[in-house]
Each structure stands twice: as C-alpha cells, then as structure tokens.
Length: 168
Image (tube, rainbow, N blue to C red; front, side, top):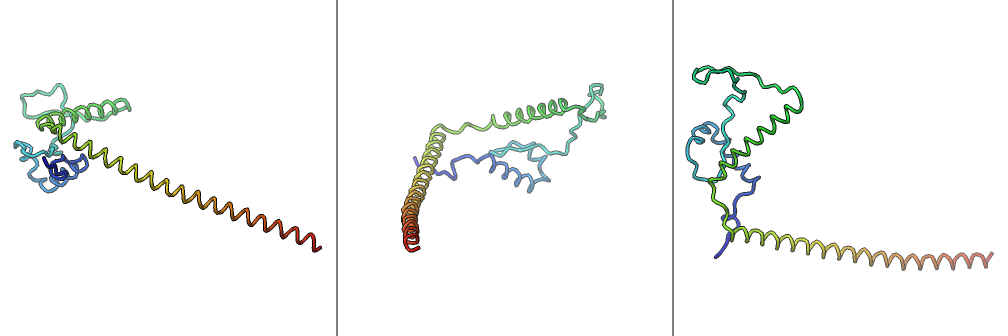
C-alpha cells in the first residue's frame, strides 16, 4: 500500500485554523446558511458572531417575543475566571460534538506518521550530533595548535631575555 503524506494525512491545527479563516472570510455572507447545512468536508464551522452574547435574565418569559437582557460585567477576578472557564467548557463541548462526526484516523496511517516523525527526528539529531562533534574536534585541534604556538613563543621570549642579560 503506497502512502502519500500530502494527501492522506489530516491537516495540522494551524493549517486548519488558516483554512477556516480563509473559508470564513471568503464566505462571510453565507456563514449562517453554511452552518445550517450538513457539512460533508472536515472543516470545523464556527457560528457567526452576529448573535447577541449577553445573557437572558431568569425572569424573562420564554413565550414572549421580547427578551430582557442584563449586562454581563464581572466585578472580581474570580468572576472573570469563572466566566472564562464556562466559555472554554462550552467551546470544548461544541468542538467535541463537531469532531465526533469525523471518523478516527486509521491505525496504519497513525503508525506511519509516528514512524516518519521518529525517523526524521532521529536523522536530525544524528546529523546535529555529527556536526557538533566535527566543530568541537576542529575547535580542539585549533586550541592544541595555539597551545603549541604559545609554547614556542614563550621559549623564544625566554631565549631573548637570556641573550639580553648576557649582552648587558
């Protein structure tokens, strides 16, 4: 079985986000219509932000056509964190609902992806280690050469001092 990485692997999260931004920007006028249709592709649709995000008060009558809204202004940091947590939980539940319709990636593809990742990572680490070892070896040989040259220079300086002392 041949495996093509570009066509059979799922999109990375960043690529999905870019694709989603691109599709939502090109079809912003038809976003509500698209959300109502059954999607046949793998993209995740985010509901339009046109709807009001303020909460409906508890005393509002559900049967009436008008609803009373209360402004949502958190007063403390714990209220802000609580609201953020609730929003994150809601988003996560929506994502799970959307992703539950997508079939899982077959085991053979997952295994191939992991093997490919491991082999490329090991090749990179091996080449990095070889390059680092070569550079360290070159640096060590340069240090040894400098040490030899320094010893020669010191011996020349010592001989010059001895000749000066004798001539004086």
